[in-house]
Image (cartoon, rainbow, N blue to C red; front, side, top):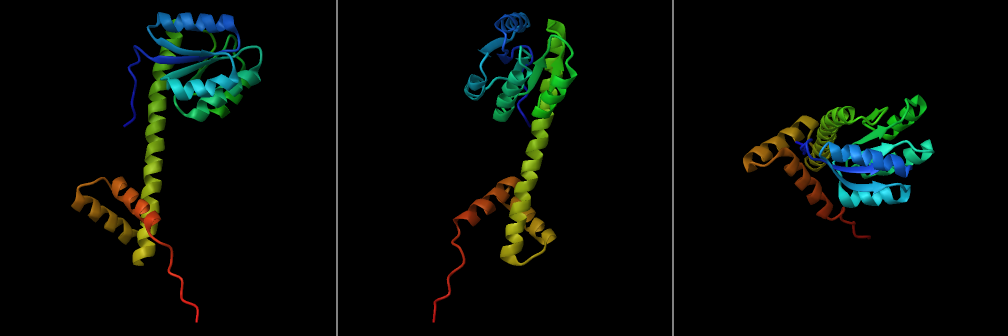
Length: 199
């Protein structure tokens, strides 16, 4: 289960090319009771800030250059640390489309506090669901790899490999994914095929 932060007090990263807008959004975020842990104007700074500060949410404003804002979004999403909300002064469909491709979770067309808090609440729930789904896919991939190793080692079919995993998991009272990880890790420690001596 993913960590769902307390939406009454969040750690927020704000990125905007315009210093005046950066100040306005900071004031709104603080008025909602959240902590602004980092503010950035430069694209090259934002990835490091995101990695170091691990914000709960990031707010990216559209400044003079839509490419600049998209680059900020790219950097934050690449760190995969938190969801991103784009804050626009006007409804810019082209920018919203591009930002969506880069992974924003929501946008708002003005910076009203009430609307921002509602967007934050929704986005954090969606992000938690996204992380849970991502985790489920990762767990499934792990189990599939372990089944493949067992099928190869024991010359058995997929169902038999899964039963072997499940039986071992129950008898050891450990999670299926822990057993699958152990099988994968153990395989990496095994030597490769023995070389036949040359005659």
